[in-house]
Length: 153
Image 1: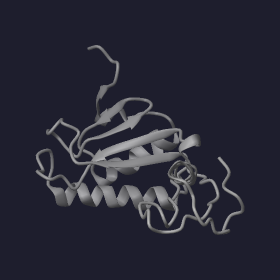
Image 2 (image 1 turned 120 degrees about the horizontal axis):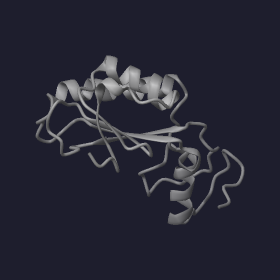
Image 3 (image 1 turned 180 degrees about the vertical axis):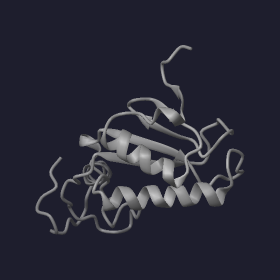
Image 4 (image 1 turned 135 degrees about the horizontal axis):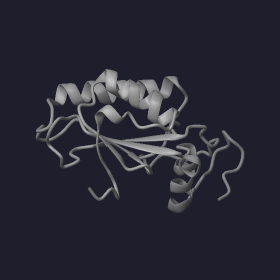
């Protein structure tokens, strides 16, 4: 993938070049962990939407403050906008908001990959512990773990 000089204008970036540039800006090639959390649900079952949304906002803010996540280019998601090359992001954590992770009990629910560690009761205090202990430190917050992918119980 050739991105050219940062800040230079690209008259016509092909769709594959655009998606490659977005992935690079988001640090996808260097991501170490990915946290997925249910929030802003269409039909809240595991926890009230206000609660899940507050935790989600806190997660986003905290990851940005700690420099653990990278921002996409300003033009992403706007195919009619001219794409300009961007520098690779320096983050190591991706985050994704999911409508529902299908547990529907003791939420909010979050899962961290590639570790496959599933968390229940994810409040703001708990997400701070997950960030500090798991996303940064590599150790699961066992008190809130209810499952692990590939763990045959």
